[in-house]
Image: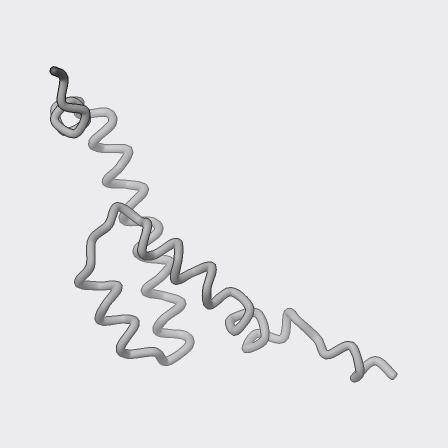
Amino acid sequence: MIDPIQTILNNPYVFGALLIWSLIIKGLALWRAARLKQAGWYIALLIVNTVGLFEIIYLIATSRKYREMNGIISDVNSES
């Protein structure tokens, strides 16, 4: 039986692509945690390695708070 994980790790192109993907997503998540001043999340994101899955969940979960912090989402009532 062919082990898919071993196949991925033995293929340098797939392994390199996963490594680059993981570094980019982790960098974005760490940057957002730092901007939102969430030290606990920053440490957790730095330690936990899930090939970007944990980081993507964090980015999605904090997207609204990050947009509000940067003024991207405006209050509908403030236009009146």
